[in-house]
Length: 202
Image (cartoon, rainbow, N blue to C red; front, side):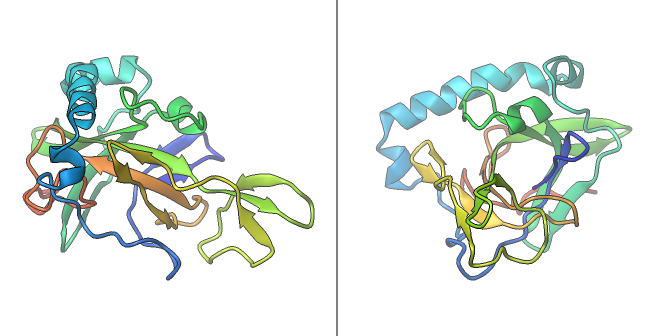
């Protein structure tokens, strides 16, 4: 996913960062981290309840999410993510709330209709310039200089560590961490995989 901070809006991508990035291997829904964690299962159930209304796009828009209509559907040979319907205010808030994901993922179903398939949690990478002591996201596509220091740790939810840091897919978008949760469409690669091979953008 990518974040358009300058415009106050957000789009999505999934490019992996430089070699310092953690592994992006999918985590199966059968993993002990989820299967043996009653608290995690309870949290996921709460997210389903909190986002169930957003099968109705009008309700998602009323809650502050951008409409997926006309948005770019993100796909790769590994599968699809869909159209990212982002809530800009939630992205700009550094606090993570499991019941308020920063983005909703929809896939087109034809006739201008969309189906909710997943949620995505997003947190920009914040860097401190040691020369000026200023803290801000990093927008260039190239990795940051050695004189910059990451000040926020890799976040985690549901016992899963976010993927990243990863660069934005397009110029003008910052590096970030993210976590996909395929609550509304089965994913053979796992609940927290980046891509869903069972979905397409067609």
